[in-house]
Structure formats: C-alpha cells, structure tokens
Length: 254
Image 1 (cartoon, one colour):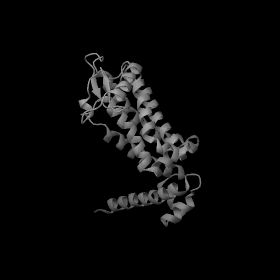
Image 2 (cartoon, rainbow, N blue to C red):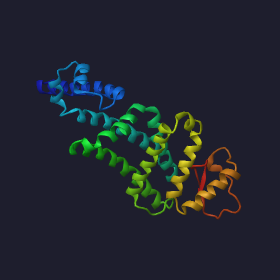
Image 3 (cartoon, rainbow, N blue to C red):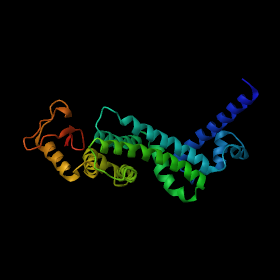
C-alpha cells in the first residue's frame, strides 16, 4: 500500500470515527444539545481537527440523517417484490416505513424530530443532499404507481405528487402513534393500519371508493380459503375482477 493510499484510508477512518461518536450523541441528546466540543472529546480529537473533515455540526448531522434515509429506502425497496400486485407492493411500502419507525427509532427521531427543527438553518448544499435522498425515494414510489397504472390497477394520476403524499401518510401515521398515546394506539394498531390501507387504496385504485366498498363486503362476508389468492368470488361481483391482497385482508380489482 502506497503512502497516499494509506493516508486516504486513515482520513476516511477518522471521518467515520467522528460520525460514529456524533451519531451516539445525536441519538442521546438531539441535534441542538450536542456540541462540536462534545463530539471532539468523544472522538478523542482536538476541536480544530473536526473541521478538517466537516465544515460544521450541521454537516455531521446530515451525514447521520443520510444513513437513516438509506435504511428507510432499503426497507421500502425490499418490501416491493415483482411477483406481487401493485397495490400489495404499495401497501407493503407503507408497512416498511412503520418497520423503520419500530426497528430504528433513533434514526427515526433524527429524521423526523431534529430534521424539522433545523431545516431552516441548513446551508443550501446540505439541504440539497437531503432533498436528493428524499427525491430518490419519491421517484421509486412514483415509478411503482406508474407501473400499477399501466397494468390497469391504478387510475391515472400525477405520480410524483401522489408519491409525496403517500410518504406524508406514512409519516403522519407514525407521528400519531407517538403523540396520541402509545398505549392507546398500540392496542388498536392493526385496526389503524387497516384503516390507513383503506384510505390509500381508495385514493389510487381504479374506481377507488366503489372498489373499497367491494373490499369491505368481501372482508365481512366472504371467507378466505388458505391464502388470500383463493378467495370465494361473490355471485354479484362482475367478471374480470381479480383478487388482490389489501387493506381489509383482501380486495378484488378489475
């Protein structure tokens, strides 16, 4: 290994060490209550050394935030599988957001709480870094919606705008869990989840509200045999409708 390569690796390792200790402090104290001096002491570095690797505390925070956004995007992408129908994939994506909320609560807090507090003071370059990560996720959701529309499952819509709203629905559901009393919400979490899925489906499927009513009647009246793909077709349902796993156990889509 040459001298330049070794120095570059040492520099990268030092940068990772700074992020590692800063992550712990951000998780414990939040952005505003964490100082550069504390980060330097935890990393066993001089304060001035920190600025050789990061311009300010905001840049370190954005680096940690990007880690969380990357985890969230990975979970959403893993929840989307080609063998599933578009609605199931869309709803699985919302469930993946709740998995992020449950399994990575510290990253969730950094992303939702600290981010809302400091976005107005971030330099434009750092805002652009966050926006790029967010828009990558929006583009992924929008592409899934467009694919569903081409397949005839979803109605025509402004895909990117709807994708942004879909993300907002998931964020709102998570915030409701946190702010409305965890014991109250957790006790009825599955019921709330199904209602959220119901609202999502009504907004995107062809014939939205009428399809949701079909799903409601099916969930109440028609038992599912072994798997959701073996649902009994009610005699009053027109031909050409296909079963689709959804917000009330299963739905039928045309």
